[in-house]
Amino acid sequence: MKTILVVDDEEDLVEALTVMLADEGYRVVSARNGRDALKRLHEEKPRLVLTDFVMPIADGCELVRGMREIEEFRSTPVVMMSASTTACAVAGSSRPLELAAFLPKPFRWEQLLETVVGLIGSAS
Image 1 (tube, rainbow, N blue to C red):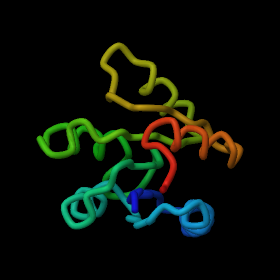
Image 2 (image 1 turned 45 degrees about the horizontal axis):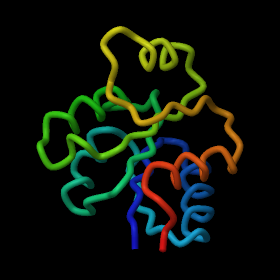
Image 3 (image 1 turned 30 degrees about the horizontal axis):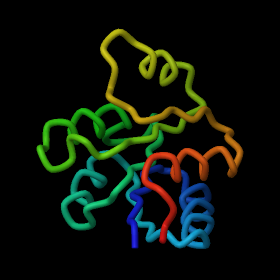
Image 4 (image 1 turned 90 degrees about the vertical axis):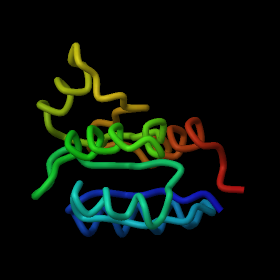
């Protein structure tokens, strides 16, 4: 079963994504901020990370930069999700964060699922 790490401080969104992705057959684990997510990476070894940009303690950029410093997670695809225009600027900056995709919030469920399947395939 393919594991996806969802990183967001909005509990309702994490819960909704967990239910929807689990219904598609993925195993979903979560973290509330980038620092906790870096710890979960080692425990869970996800195939994909879905992260928010704006979070307390460590934001999405800090998470991605931290992942890219760890050999084991250097190539793990990361999808950043955000309503922040700052995140849009970061995602398109001249020093890219090596994101697999960027989804502006709010996004359609079909759009997220298509992105996930495109990056790691179906759950089965």
